[in-house]
Length: 200
Image 1 (cartoon, rainbow, N blue to C red):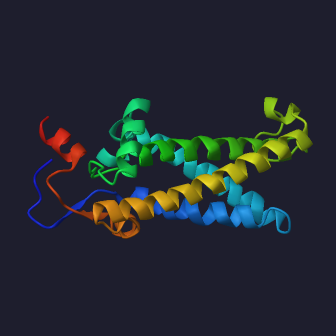
Image 2 (image 1 turned 30 degrees about the vertical axis):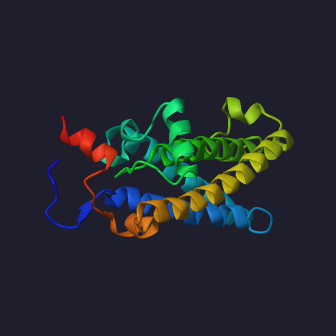
């Protein structure tokens, strides 16, 4: 990785950015149509599942800051970072900081469970991609309770994520939502992960 001559540096590739905003859109479509527009809810849910599947693959083979290896940190590192956040003295990361990385994993796990339980509900009725599989044997009402729990948990995680983005934008002097639109962040030479990469 070379030191950029401009004041910004490309961090998020186009696929990550399209994934991010598409996931937000289709999750909320699915969440808001659960009771009254079942067909739309189901297809939005399928789209969420496909997006999550893509992100799991891209987290292994994708670009530098899209890969899990670049932002999945140890619990101790995450806790230390959160403590530093509360003291307004956080180290800066070009990609996801340790708390944001943990949130990415939490959201993906929660969305996987939302998707599996949702498809299990319709599989019990002989429909969907899991029809005729092991998942079709679960009681639909029980699956619906679990599905609703993880849907609400995902919403809570999204709200915490938004709060974290706003707070991190303030701490870093960055417009992080804009960075997820343009792909670029303002460059600073004290980025922890940039320095780590530059030493290799």
